[in-house]
Image 1 (cartoon, rainbow over the protein chains, first blue to last red):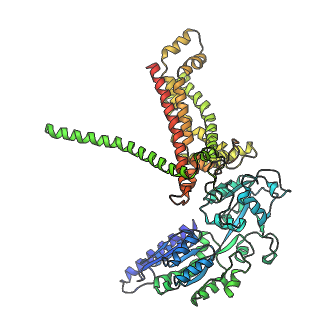
Image 2: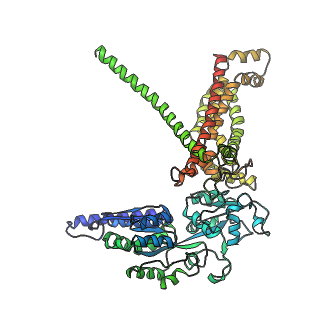
Image 3: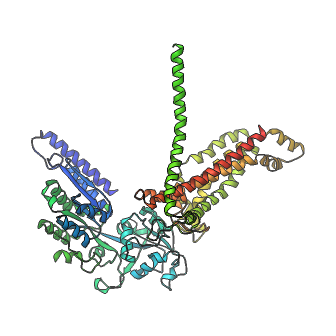
Length: 344
Length: 296
């Protein structure tokens, strides 16, 4: 909804620029529609990051009508395969690049810059009338969602004996969703390993509707979606039983997602830019446009922007063309915050 | 216009008409062909026994399991509830319209009833989810927000005109001589209607009901929206279920790559669906044929 108004605004701005260019007799190249930038920027990768990149690409193409930006969503892994085969300029990723992927890129002689663009958090929710639960541990979530629980863990008191002896009704995203991949990996330890006997939908509205109308419901989806439906849902705090990143159960909020204390259900998402491609002005301008506008567009499409300090560090990192990954050998769930890594 | 050109135009028009008729047949053959082709590919990976008699349906998950029974029971449950609503209401409406209503009432009421069949099913779906379910939850505590009951009831309302309209046609076609005979024997209006006219129109009414069942089984939007998408083997109408049609919608909405087993499941389920509605339609046709022979 708000994204559409943004697009309208972009359209109007474009029209105004066009009019200005026409009135000026076309002798000057204006910043915007009239500039001479042309070419193709090809992006592929994570479907989680796709909405952000797609929004940036759309705005960018309005300002530079000569440039075509193609954004694919073949998944983080599929995106890196293409990236390291030199088929794309930029790769979207919802996790840091893996060691094997770094090697594949190195073998093909591809150097990359790692750019965190936003945070993504997953909220675990219950019905607002639910009185017995306000926090859960990751271990309890695992017991509830792992494949072995299918057909066996069906009642609330099987998770914690003090909870009522009534059926627990589960809601979650479908198997095509990046949120599903991420939740299963963070909770059960293995990507896509999940029980199958829950109400699944790619449409978050359906999940909200289901949890809102059922006292015994529990479900999960992207934090941004909870923000829009605050009054209909009850948010659970999650305890990862690790005192080093904040003690006790912690509820997701823009702060706890961004500062990394809401673990393990929050993570930064990235774009990876091929250094060689930055010699082409259209790619360079696109990445710069991305860095300038990410914060606003990230909010529009429902993710959490980086903190200002982090944004500045990311910008510095890009200006210095610092290549390689900050996450060598680890994953984004581990203890260091993004800011600490950026400062390393 | 010479005779020759006229003959030629005639020939062209005939061919054109033939092509139109052939197109629909060819398309049907094509659809069935694709269904069969993909189903065979699916059955090569999954033994037919596991498919038809398996009790766990989780083809998209980590431990895939391809037992279609939960989808079948879900479909039967929702259709059963729909019939429980549509059959009595539809039949009583038909008896009223055919035997009791004044001709003017009948003429105005019938089209109004048929409007119900013209409401887009997506509207019925949201009607079930956002109105009927909350309403039922007031009376039935423990009713999940996605359940088989509410879409079943709404689907019953949707197919009600189908039942009433076809049954009414059947009742109306019963020769007046039978009614008059009943009255001559001293039967009341109700006795004539229930003991003479309804039994006489029985095969037509059954045909209408079977068509309605087949419509209920194939109905997609209402269940996709309001029944939840959780395949479970249950006949409890208060919990979420998934029907065969809703499963096909669910997979088709995602980006399942072609050629994978997940992709083939929708054809296998589609084949099952096609077979069940096909058999029901044939049966209903057969019943109607019998009915026609009796009174024409």
